[in-house]
Length: 288
Image 1: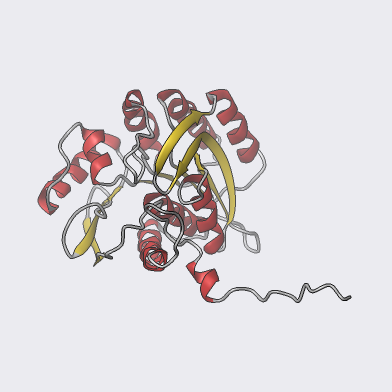
Image 2: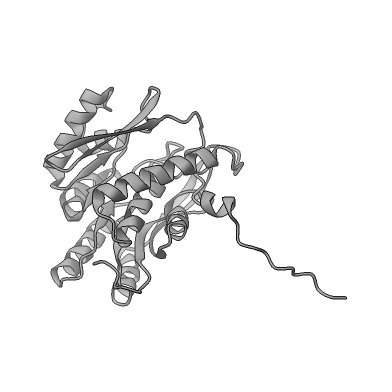
């Protein structure tokens, strides 16, 4: 569903909370805001984490995840939505079931599925029993699935692709398995270029940008999927949304290298555009 003329585009994120603000719900909402979209959220899990790692995870009860989702979908005109960290099979199944029901009554919006499995720090964010639920229940509803190389390998039960030929074979297998387009992210690969592959079942597109020499990549996947959802909520078709989101993330990574947040792997700077042209601050000095 696309926004009516004169109405504010709205995007929804269904994901986990990152207490340090670099990934998850917090990064998604920043991205929506930066791209001129009103952001709504459904929180699936609480994480105690920072730029150095994840200390603890507390999943939200599936019935309360659904209560949040129902509250949003019954009131807001969602132009696009993304899913991120869903924590366990029960939450994946509940969310997929509700989104399928929503689609059956003619209120479907494009769904971007980011199969968040492991944090940048290496901490596991998706229970092993949830992989099949993502593949069988959630991915078939998606306009796009956005795994990185490690996530694609885990979804397929295979080794991580060690080159573009192997990555191409995996993306073709994922599209066949999930029955949805796939953007296979190559940011965790090696080489002078970071190469993503997009396959819609017919055409394979190679998307490459110079690899940035920065360790500050916390939240990259969240920001990318949120940016795709935001641009689709604004009316972009999928290929244009992917291209625009990749440009946004690349600029955010470049700016994030200088952000100076945290003592570990710092976050992407979702607000680089606002920082380059901050709004004027009024004189708040109290007259004596």
